Length: 164
Image (cartoon, rainbow, N blue to C red; front, side, top):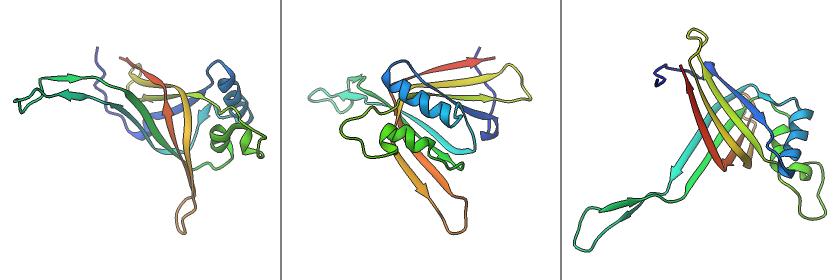
């Protein structure tokens, strides 16, 4: 059955988890140290999925005769009002504490976005982004507004689950 509920940002929550492997172990250290399994005080969460669809045009035809699927890119942003070093450490790993001697492992983690309206129990929408890496971090200190950090991330793949 298709989910036809309407959600707002107040119905959402974000959880982080660590995948297996060296990159996941780096992320698990940060998630445990900052108790970051449930991410709080976020706003403007955005997930974008792009598929490079390539049209094939035959000579003498104005319209494409075939659309071919290409590469899929998953990326997004999260704005966060709870400022500490957690997101920056998820970007830089051990390089956030000091300059490492050489190459280092960048943490990878999973992001689970859950939407569920308490007034409609049993109806949920869950998107899980796997093997995410942060590729941009911004620290914004405005004169008359809340201090926010914003991260840009990319994911290897995702899954979608609708309940209800």
